[in-house]
Every structure is written in structure tokens, then in C-alpha cells.
Amino acid sequence: MSKPYSQVKAMFAIARASFRSITRSPSAVVFTLAFPLVFILVFGFIGGGGISVQVAVKKESDRNNPIYQALLHVPVVSLDTMLTPEEMQSDLEKGRIDATLSITDKGMGAMPRYSVHVETTSASSEMGAVLKSVLNNIFYTVNSQHITMPTYAELKQTEVSVREYKRIDFILPGQLGFSLLSSGVFGTAFVFMSLRQTLVIKRFFATPIRRPFIVLGEALSRLVFALIGSSIILLLGHFAFGFTLIHGFITVVNMLLLSALGLIVFMGFGFVVSGIAKNESAIPPIANIITLPQFLLSGTFFPISVFPSWLQPICKVLPLTYLNDAMRKVAFEGANLLSVGHQIGIVALWGVIVYIAAIKVFKWE
Image (tube, rainbow, N blue to C red; front, side, top):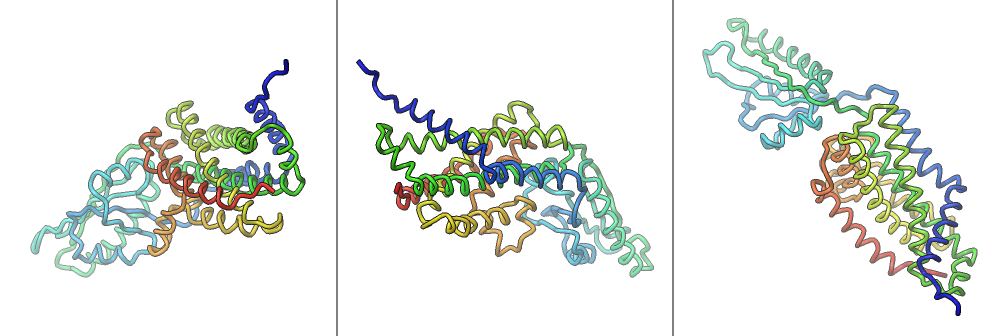
């Protein structure tokens, strides 16, 4: 008596064959490993780019004074007046802002009239020095205009000891997200287009394996390959450039779980592309419409706060924005997956939407 046909065994057989084909595909290796590693190496070896000091202004601070008005016109200083005291302290300690600022008006006749208190961190000492230099220049100008009051304004500075937030701590999660996005969209789209054109899927239909297990087999192989690539990126970043993995192995596991979620969602985009595209030459332009906006606007290289205010709402819609944000919080701040539940929920919601679309447009033949 013959044994019953095992869908699971067939799925794993497809997964093994697909994994071998992925490892032999130059484009898969390039998008999953080569591009992200090149960017990590470049940003790991350089010190910094343009200077921008992120400063949170305390709500009780006096803003109707010459010092604050002068700061508004300094290009290298970015002032944020919307944070609560709790958010301000948390962002300062976690490296999201470089300093907090408070300006007190002591009233006419007091000397000095204005007292400026700046709080920086040990991790942002360079940016703190830039802000101090800017303020000293402003003080020189203001004090020179009030000869009868030589000390019209004074600066008080305190420093909080915190963990250093390095450039690699921002760049690496973005590159990991880029790797997952590229692998999920381009890899999936090209693979299923190729399987249709070479009639491999048609041959699968001649076997007892059901369609969902064909998809699961391909997905499993891509997931394993992407997680191997993610592990290499994380370990290289940590040991070569000091990328922060605050809780060690637990942080790595959480990062890989986020990577798995991201890849699954991005594969849905790949299914949509393979369903829309008429042939292989049509895949790159359609896929780039999906990947390029996310690559450029999702905080891969720069915080989305550097973009114009009209563009930021678009940035905050893209799924890669939330995946990058979740990874940075987990790696540097030590957040667990529950703490980034909001970001995970947004990414998962995108997954539901995109797989509904994929079901509508996906073609087997």
C-alpha cells in the first residue's frame, strides 16, 4: 500500500530547490547582501556629513527675546517646540535630539536679564559644542548692543551621561530594511514570472501538491536566505563598527523576527508586481515605483524630520518607515516587540492590504 502524498514534504522540497537557485542568483546576492554591506562599509568609515543640531525648546521658555529670534535664523540649529517634558527627556537620553533649551526672562533691570540653560548629553558633546559656539556668538552680538548692561544674557550648561548614539546605529537598520524590501519585491516578482514563463508552475499542477504549498515553499526559501543575510549584516555591523545591540542575543532575535515580518509583507508587493507585469522587462519599472519612494523617504539614510513638512505625512505612511523605526528602537533603546507594537501593527496592516491586492492580480499561468 503506497504512502499518502505529503504536502509538507513537497513544500520543503520546493523550498530546498528554490533556496539553491537563490544562492546561485547574482541579483539575489547583490540586493540582499552586497548593496547593504557596501553602504554599511561606506557609512561605517566616514565620520559625518552636514551639521544639524536638533534642539528641543522647553514650553515655559521665553521666546520673545533677541536670543531666541536669532536662533531661528541659524541654519545649523533645528528647534522643536512641540515635545512634552517627558518626551524631551526621553529623546535626549536616547539620542533623538542633541540638546534642550530654556530661556528665562528675569525682567527689566535684572543683570543679566536673560538666562539661557542648555542641557546636552555626553553622546552629543560635538553637537553641544556647536550649539554653545552659536549661542556665544549671539551673546556677543546681544551684549554688545547693551553697553550699560555688559552681561545682558548668560549661558548655563549641564551635561547628562548617556550611551553614545553612533551614525551606524541609524544607518544599519535602514540598510537592513532596504535589503528586505529589495529581496521581497524584486526577488519574488522575478522568481514567479520566471516560473510562469518556463512552465514550471504548470508542471507543478500535474503533481498532487496544492497551490498554497507551492507559494509557501518559495516563501520559506526566501525567508531563510533573507534571515541569513540579516544575521550577517547585524554581526558585521556590531563587531566591525560597534553597532549597538543593547541586549545582545535577545536583541538579535527580535531584529530577526522584525526582519521576517518585513520580508513577508514585502513579498506581498512582489506578488502584486509579478501579477501586473506582462513580462520580465516590465518588472523593474513597476517594482521601482514601489521601492524607490520607500528607499528615499523612509528614513534609510536620514531622519524623516529633515524633509519638508508637506512631505513628512507621505513618509509616515510607508511601511518601511515603521519597520526602520521599530528596528532602531529595538537595537539601541532596548525596546521589546510589545513596545514597538504600534510600528508592527502598521506594517502588518500593510501586509493585509497588499496580500488582498496580490490575490486579486496574481496569475499562475
